Image (cartoon, rainbow, N blue to C red; front, top):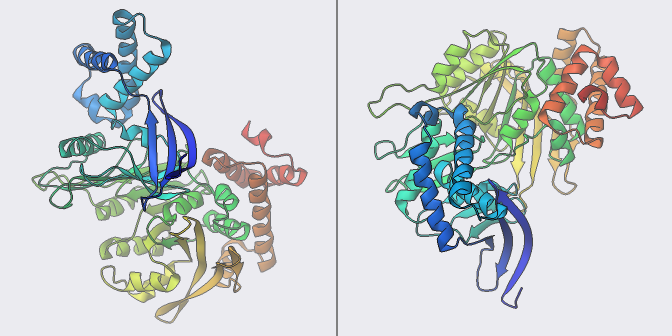
Length: 501
């Protein structure tokens, strides 16, 4: 640290066995803070060894084209290359230290199968976005604590950026070229990728990678982070259990998909879920009966494309109990989705809207243009909010949809108070309570008692740090089968070790 700069944070990082240090630096003459990746520079002899290894592996490791194009074979290919690299290193460079061997093999995997130095950024769990704008400026990152930062990483050429985009697309059956200069795809890790080519992006070829947490958010972790409160978490659980239709709104990066993912984790395991997305983002626990589906771009001749509408129509033939549409964007998709609601399927989706009034406007005006009368099939609308200044995400509004005549109204039951940083109740639920009473035979008091039970379970999850999606899913599944057992553990405050093993 000098008078001209201040180190705001430092921490270690590792990707594929390659170690590095990260420093967040504020410089006096810079308006943007710096994300400095400090990694050991390769000696010239090590660089020569790396190039030698690449050539030897290309010659000696048989990899079929079908393996390269099959994302399920990624781990197999990586292990093949690592094993062959170790063999060659021991044979050709017998005097290499174990640490040097690990670094050179890690660098080899990064360069042959990954995205080079970008892999170091993707390994940093503190980052939400990794952005390449062109070869003429450094890579940018969005840090969970410090916001947008410039890195000290520069890619070598526009061709390298295009090559990285093509590698990403090829692994998930998508393509990017002069005829198709825009691409939405995802990494095998689930991170979402958008790539554009010059001259569509006028600065140069670009890549935007939105990183997703390795462990998906669950309702317990959302409560622990103050994104939602216990009452709303329990309401989402009850609404999911009894198949209410839910729409999650919010702005870009407000946590819509994360909340939807947390809600779906409460689905009873004996029901089938079909999810339809442009790019795979949802991650549900393994024992759910879940079939994820994704769209596909057309080839350069305009053939072979599969759109969301195609998936929607096909999903209705797959005997789904629940249908999840990644995002409502167009009229025909919305029409089929609401038709599914009216024919008895439980439906979940997201929409870009900043409050419940905007949800109504978005759904009833172009390009979606649904008749207002069909919105009555929705039961709950939940709005997510992201404060750009601090980066916090909060549930902003929770509203039930109340049909009346040929239209609908919204009864906002919970609203976020910025001064208190709390979700506070603002009105009593009516339609949801009536619906639950009608379909369960419960009195209103019994519905409220059930909500209280779920609050107690969620509170115990938070207290005992049960945040993983498999664990939350297992507890909710056990609760459906044997509620007395789960409630007994909660009442005795023993945690959930007996259930989770």
